[in-house]
Length: 349
Image (cartoon, rainbow, N blue to C red; front, side):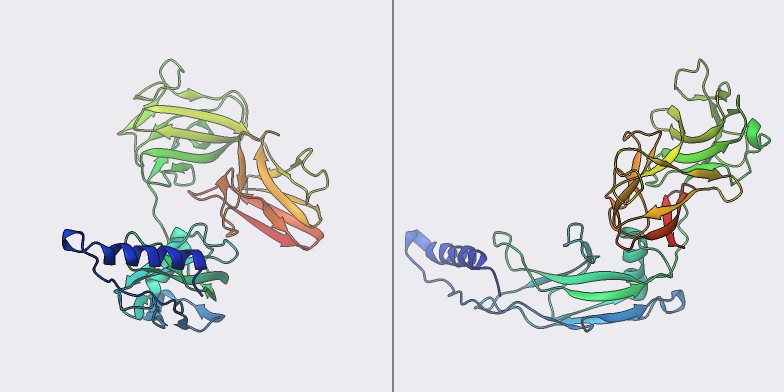
């Protein structure tokens, strides 16, 4: 049922509209009799879907619901929202909007919401919730239906992000090597990525494309990118976070050593358990005993650079939420910092 305070607001709005007759005369408005919120009838609560690229143009669901009852006839706009289960709709994504009691969307659209907007992993089932937001007037608060739960397995979509090549002494000065690149995850001219330099004293440049036609260095080693500039020089070997901004023509690099920290780890929140980088697999790993609790990844034994998981979807965000461990045991944890989106794996041994 609609919250009592919301009904009082609706009643006040209805009375206000009804009282504003011509010349100040009272004109009776609609009588607001509290009714029921809509109920999503299709798909059924707890339904399971496995999406396939081959059926991307087919209709998902479809979605259908009962009518919202505001106690008087009103044009209702229904907005269907989706979020990861347990997130309490803190970051809902709109599936679509309708003025009727149904909505048809394709499997491709649902897949793009799950895999793209929410960052859920492909070929793995994920639990999500769907609800209706009901609106009748800009001055009347939106009310929401009870959510339904769905388990949906999206398929992987190859997303092509803009990239900068990073040729250098460590890889034969080859700008066509697509294994040594950094990405612009938001396609906004700002690039970031992690590149491993196995030897001290490495030098590199950035190229816009797989040739030397447009290349950037740093003449003066002042953090400014210069077209055709001097080689960028590093002192130590290691895994570096590289940042390059082609809008401001600036760049930065940071050597990183990663660890795992948290109440689930052997040393709690007091210190890190070091992770080991494997150049052959291009990932950091650690095997250790975990207890029920939380954990995060952080660089250089400091909180300035740390990664968590905001949506519990195995993709990482800087300063993101704690990763929760519920089942104690021996685990192997992988941190994958290749690509435009950073991910991790938690495997119980």
